[in-house]
Length: 88
Image (cartoon, rainbow, N blue to C red; front, side, top):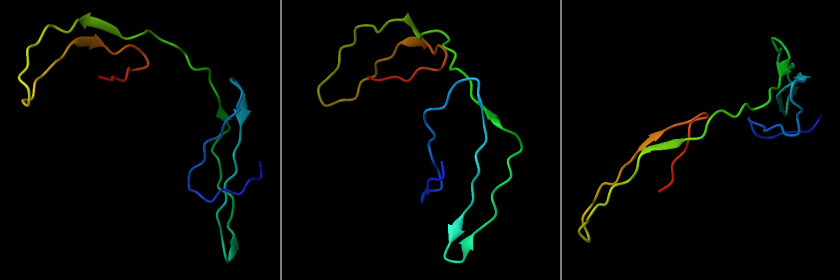
Protein backbone atom coordinates (compact mmCIF):
# COMPACT_ATOMS: atom_id res chain seq x y z
CA UNK A 1 0.00 0.00 0.00
CA UNK A 2 2.69 2.47 0.96
CA UNK A 3 0.08 4.67 2.61
CA UNK A 4 1.19 6.80 5.57
CA UNK A 5 -1.01 6.19 8.59
CA UNK A 6 -0.85 8.52 11.57
CA UNK A 7 -2.89 6.36 13.97
CA UNK A 8 -1.56 3.28 15.82
CA UNK A 9 -4.37 1.14 14.32
CA UNK A 10 -5.49 0.62 10.73
CA UNK A 11 -8.44 -1.33 9.30
CA UNK A 12 -7.55 -3.19 6.12
CA UNK A 13 -10.42 -3.75 3.69
CA UNK A 14 -10.83 -5.48 0.35
CA UNK A 15 -8.92 -8.65 1.25
CA UNK A 16 -9.89 -11.89 -0.46
CA UNK A 17 -10.72 -15.07 1.48
CA UNK A 18 -8.21 -17.92 1.69
CA UNK A 19 -5.27 -15.70 0.64
CA UNK A 20 -1.97 -15.03 2.40
CA UNK A 21 -1.05 -11.45 3.21
CA UNK A 22 2.06 -9.96 4.77
CA UNK A 23 2.04 -6.52 6.35
CA UNK A 24 5.08 -4.37 7.02
CA UNK A 25 4.93 -1.74 9.71
CA UNK A 26 7.53 0.85 10.70
CA UNK A 27 7.28 3.94 12.86
CA UNK A 28 8.54 7.35 11.79
CA UNK A 29 9.35 10.51 13.70
CA UNK A 30 11.51 13.60 13.09
CA UNK A 31 14.66 11.48 13.51
CA UNK A 32 13.66 9.18 10.64
CA UNK A 33 12.04 5.81 9.97
CA UNK A 34 12.69 2.95 12.38
CA UNK A 35 13.16 -0.67 11.34
CA UNK A 36 10.20 -2.61 10.01
CA UNK A 37 8.56 -5.01 12.46
CA UNK A 38 9.23 -8.69 11.84
CA UNK A 39 6.21 -10.87 11.16
CA UNK A 40 6.24 -14.46 12.37
CA UNK A 41 4.26 -15.73 9.38
CA UNK A 42 1.86 -14.51 6.72
CA UNK A 43 -1.73 -13.82 7.74
CA UNK A 44 -4.28 -16.08 6.03
CA UNK A 45 -7.79 -14.67 5.63
CA UNK A 46 -10.78 -16.93 6.21
CA UNK A 47 -14.39 -16.83 5.12
CA UNK A 48 -16.74 -15.91 7.95
CA UNK A 49 -18.66 -19.05 8.80
CA UNK A 50 -22.28 -18.42 9.62
CA UNK A 51 -23.48 -20.55 12.51
CA UNK A 52 -27.00 -20.44 13.85
CA UNK A 53 -29.44 -17.64 14.60
CA UNK A 54 -30.39 -16.71 18.16
CA UNK A 55 -33.65 -18.19 19.40
CA UNK A 56 -36.15 -17.01 22.00
CA UNK A 57 -36.52 -19.89 24.47
CA UNK A 58 -39.17 -18.30 26.67
CA UNK A 59 -41.03 -15.18 25.50
CA UNK A 60 -41.70 -12.02 27.44
CA UNK A 61 -44.59 -12.27 29.85
CA UNK A 62 -47.16 -9.57 30.48
CA UNK A 63 -45.90 -7.11 33.09
CA UNK A 64 -47.81 -4.34 34.82
CA UNK A 65 -45.71 -1.36 35.85
CA UNK A 66 -46.20 1.79 37.86
CA UNK A 67 -45.37 5.11 36.24
CA UNK A 68 -42.15 6.60 37.60
CA UNK A 69 -40.97 3.31 39.14
CA UNK A 70 -38.44 0.87 37.69
CA UNK A 71 -39.68 -2.43 36.31
CA UNK A 72 -37.96 -5.52 35.01
CA UNK A 73 -38.73 -7.38 31.80
CA UNK A 74 -36.78 -10.41 30.68
CA UNK A 75 -36.85 -13.43 28.43
CA UNK A 76 -34.65 -16.48 27.87
CA UNK A 77 -32.65 -16.49 24.64
CA UNK A 78 -30.04 -18.81 23.13
CA UNK A 79 -27.09 -16.71 21.94
CA UNK A 80 -26.56 -18.44 18.60
CA UNK A 81 -23.24 -18.25 16.78
CA UNK A 82 -21.69 -15.80 16.46
CA UNK A 83 -23.09 -14.55 19.79
CA UNK A 84 -26.05 -12.19 19.44
CA UNK A 85 -26.30 -8.59 20.54
CA UNK A 86 -29.55 -7.44 22.08
CA UNK A 87 -31.57 -4.27 21.57
CA UNK A 88 -34.62 -3.36 23.63
